Amino acid sequence: MKFDDKHVFSKPAAAVLKMFSDRAYFERKYQDLGFRDITVLEHSKTDTQFRIKVRYSARNDAPLPDFAKKFLGESNVVTQSDTWDLQKKTGRIEAEIRGVPVKVSADMVLRDEGAGSANHLKWNLSCGIPLIGGKLEQVVGADIKAKSRTDLAKSEAILASY
Image (cartoon, rainbow, N blue to C red; front, side, top):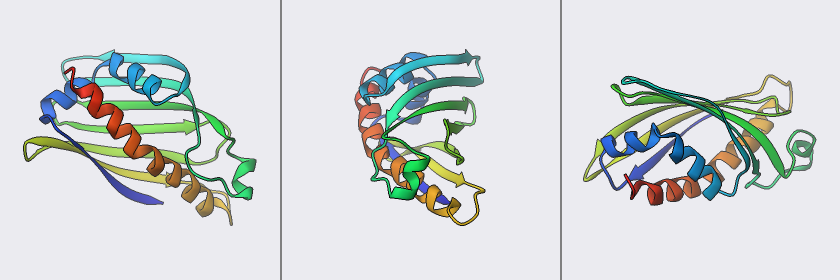
């Protein structure tokens, strides 16, 4: 399953990229989103690259059909890696949901747009289980979409300090 998303920010791409390459941003955003057990597993930053890997527990924001309850609980442990090429303003998200056989990734491009900027996300979800794989992708995709607007609102609030 593939879908696009766009997060529009009030500040230029340089300010947003400064935020996206700050460990404290991720820790604050995940806390503000109500995630629990937030642990930074890896973190590195150079003049050209940024990478962070965080594990957290998050509740599902989309309704779960009965078949999906076998894989997804009301809350799931997620390990998410965010990487950024700071010169090209391109990034990638890779997320693993413990016990869920769906691969989740998104390629990102951050651009100045109008008076602010926008992060363009191209999501890719895949599940190799015959018959229910596509349905499970849709459930996980619905959860990502449900969290998207809240994630953007929290990020925009945090951006005020950059």
